[in-house]
Amino acid sequence: MSNTVLLIHGAWLNSRSWEAVKARYVARGFTVVAPDWPYDDRSPEELRAEPDERLATLGIAEILDQYDRIIGECPEEPILIGHSAGGVWVQHLLNRGLGVAGVAIDPAPTPGVSLGRHAIVSALPVFFDWGSWRKAETMSRSYFRHRFAQLVPKDQADATYDKYIVPTPGKIWWDGIVNATPIRGDNPDRAPLLLIGGELDLIADASMTQSIYEKQKQAPSLTELKIFPGRSHFTLLDPGWEEVADYALDWAVRNARPAKVREEEAAAAPVIPA
Image (spheres, rainbow, N blue to C red):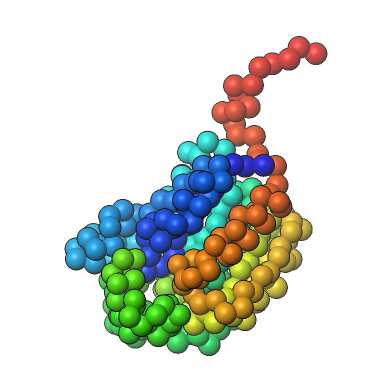
């Protein structure tokens, strides 16, 4: 079993969104790595005030390559847990043969899967913004209150937005839908995968998570689906997030495949005479 967990955040958020989950997993004795996407490694307040100009043209390939490098630097092959776009990155990384298990929570659409109604509506502000493929997009407070985190109490919505929301590159939407890199559903080298959806998710429909499951279960490794009732897209920051976080980690620990022996570990292993 791997004792290392890599947490992968999604769009509109950075690693701060994992602070409670990371602390919970560390308290259980796990080594937890929760990196930012490139150019996202400052506080949300700083990023909103002055986003890095390079964020405007950041694409999926660059993000995935960074996570690929981070996995190679982990003390052991990790469990991968991602939320929203991070749930898509988990599937891409598993498709590369990485990780001992993966959990995709409220995953954004993946290539070859029909878009859910809410996913379409939620993507429109980016696609209707001309030139968004070369801009850092900013989520409106209204979008946050009514679609992204509609279960946050109204009197807490602005403070929650200020604490967590960051600008996000519009290019990732175009890369993900218009210029999508395929994910092989029947990949024989894919680690076990759990897909988690939320009944009340207005960003990544639960029906879309079901469709992703139908595609991914073609793989010979274990694929399972869990839809949590009464949960929004903001599920890991809404009240009751602990249930989702614990379910994800417990499933991954229970079903993880043996870690691959890395080349450097194999080279360092003592040679036992025949």
